[in-house]
Amino acid sequence: MSHAIRIHAHGGADQLRWDQVEPAAPGPGEVLLRQTACGLNFIDVYQRDGLYPAGDLPAVLGMEAAGVVEALGEGVEGFAVGDRVAYPMCQGAYAEARTIDAARLVRLPGSVSDRQAAAIMLKGLTAHYLLFRSYPVQQGDSILVYAAAGGVGLLLSQWAKHLGAQVIGCVGSEEKAELARANGCDHVILYRHENIPARVREFTDGEGVAAAYDSVGKATFMDSLDSLRPFGVMVSFGNASGPVEPFSPAILAPKGSLYVTRPTLATHIATRALLEEGADRLFTAVTDGLLHIQINQTYPLAETAQAHRDLEGRKTTGSTVLITESGMP
Image (cartoon, rainbow, N blue to C red; front, side, top):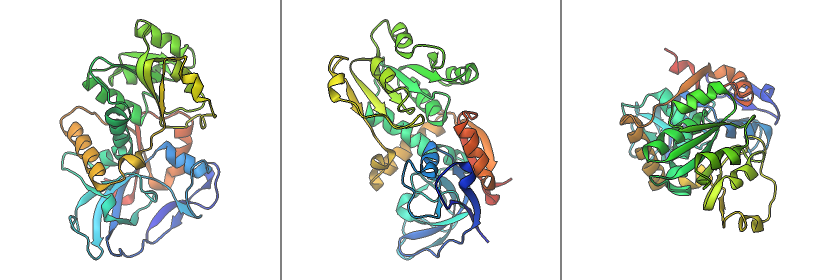
């Protein structure tokens, strides 16, 4: 008997149900995966609320997980029964077992545990494309990172610091500020009490930052633009406060001929080559000690509703992992 977390209607965390869901036998090109650990991300909340599409209801949520291959469909190459694997950006992760396209999987090195993989597949690959593609950070750059004590923020800040950037983090509490400083942030802004653009100018001798990595959305969009140096890049990659309201591109000219981009991880792992490139670089960074994974909360998969409440209530830091019975000690 296998279970999964599903929604039967859009709404709050109380819509998340622990249902009996049996996975289908793997078809051509597919594998049956026994999952051990699942990641928790804001995109899950957006799909639960209905801000992002979740497909036909009832729907299993969750976008990343790790586990063990239990069966292979016809024509699957490169994987064997018993392989430890993980995947990002493939809805249906909140499940004890699932059938999945083998092309979405990457094999895990021995140096990366299942729980670590569940914590970093989506967040780590997001940090990868932000730093190496959306705006390729150069040594000496100053950058602004929102939610710097969150799952993406901690990885992004550590990695950017290794690349030689001055990292300015934005957080909501002094407790989170301490965590951000311990993970690569040179300066921290308490956004509830401080003027973000003014503090950024103070930390950059009036110049502004080369890039603002903004996962907050509506509430901070203008502050991000006002924090950029001339020709700076505003990378809007999340909507924690709601979607950014429509704006005229004409406002970018007087602010310094700025650039705005709205990337998504799906584009950056759309091909097998892109997925493997990002995963290889991410796993190497973890193995070499450049990235320290902060799994600061774990919940049984059956208690996903509480995990959602805590995430939305800003009660979490770092990464949160949902553990199946197969992943229990």
